[in-house]
Length: 465
Ligand code: FAD
Image (cartoon, rainbow, N blue to C red; front, top):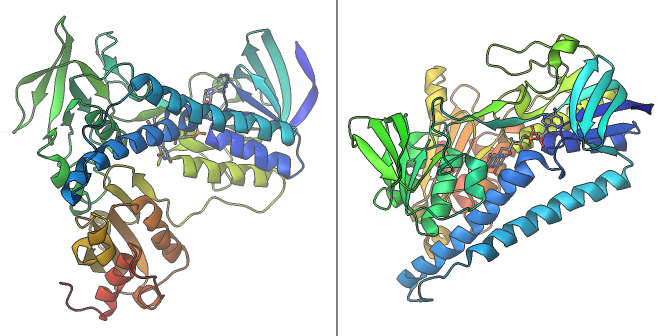
């Protein structure tokens, strides 16, 4: 079957990148068809990523706060968790958001086709759905097929060995839970399952958890968790074996035990782009050496009328990168002068405490040989942090010595993921330490710590404690 309409744009993949591109293109007056193989729009982010993980993390935070309230003289007793209700609460939020996307498609007259899309040639896509195949003709196509979890090679087939999607399903609460990979996803899952009662072991190859962030930034989180979890850094898992009594993992690392037995294992060691399921060879689309689709600043691939956005074009694999790239692709197709050229893309680990960073880390600044000034403000000296039980936090800001401008910032503490955006804006606007320190911040707020860190650099604060 072939559709009579030739669309200005066909978007392949309905994740945050894909639906944003489709909506922007429709808003700009283009005819748009959105092809998604899943029944629900929203991709990884809404269905098995950002939103379900943050919903579960919120529940975990409530449990932790109820337990920690005892230190304030407030006692609720041990929290009881109804796992079915917790799971349905998460599903309800996913349904609400994905259902909202369907309505937005209808309102914009975006044609939605459910099925797996693959190229027939440079102007036709075949969509294979429950009711057979449909051919869709297009002027331009935006590939937004996203990514999937990378699983270590040679793992046994066993339902106790999980990827992030399995972990978010809350199938059961393992008593002994091994998490391979101490990055953002691994640490967020650790906090969810720890709150629900699992004993957590984390194995990380690098010398600290959440390795893209600076080690000193992650330290308050590490100190909070080190006596609660077994955290094995500089450690490799060398084999995994499924036995009746548990999953047995062997380790290689100076401080690691030789083996451990677990009731479930989460593999959280990264994600791979989805490039193998849409017959890209038929349009001569090559991949780069890391397996991503190469694009220019207009999100255009090496094939002129084919664009690509989101996880499939490279790191950082983050929803907000995908959405911004999606808007650029749609605008370029509509004839606008647009480019994806952010000075920074913020990263956030939604742990307790949160870790957020943007621009250059201190490690990167050193590696690049940049001469920088650093303002580091410990939250123990912030009235708001102390009164909110957040005194372990820290705000760090880096300024280029030569230009005086901000080049990077990191925050560890309550709401760091919200607070980091002041630094993002400062970087985009080319602010220096004085711009930040002389901007009046409300008192008492955690945002003040950003101004205080800048004051350390411009010399208005000399003594913190
Ligand atoms: P995806 O969201 O991967 O969507 C791609 C879509 O394309 C999918 O729906 C797929 O079904 C569809 N598709 C693929 N091939 C075809 C085909 N041939 N035909 C039709 N459809 C196809 N990012 C953040 O910014 N913040 C977070 O807090 C965060 N938390 C995360 C937590 C977890 C557990 C995980 C796994 C990820 C998280 N991410 C987070 C990452 C974020 O989910 C991704 O960066 C984002 O979803 C990428 O969007 P995308 O549009 O590129 O692709």
